[in-house]
Length: 193
Image (cartoon, rainbow, N blue to C red):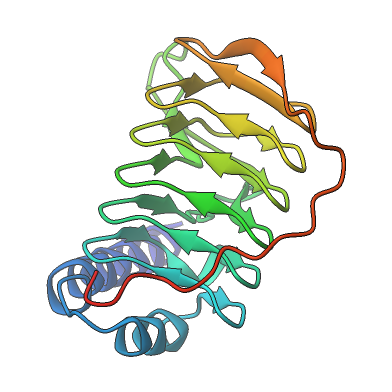
């Protein structure tokens, strides 16, 4: 029991150090290649042509997977935490996904109904061709279906069906994408961001 607590504490301290290094040491460096190198070095899986713009806040990169041709805007928060026993956490982002600036994606939250406010970790899945607008918040356990759109500032608390447009707090359906054929590339990420 004591050894388990010590081990968990040491892992937590290590992950806090990694988060700090990726934020301060890597996140402000104006080179996509350099940032991707360090994100991969600490366990993140990033597909060809994908990038995370500057000042990204990365929690536990070991459990974050990003597909190909995906662009994540500056100051985005990517939470890959999957530390608890029997955890279902982690973050999976598909191909050709466009995540705007200051989006927060969380896989961990507190159980506000428990006496000890213990953490809950649930996986977030963002499928291919999704667009998430600026300052949207995606909460633990959510799946955003292929081609869905999340409006700016929305708070997504439940799954979003493919090709659905959602917005608001909490996010609700406000429309559907008119195209059924999704076969585009996002283009190149902006230099020095």
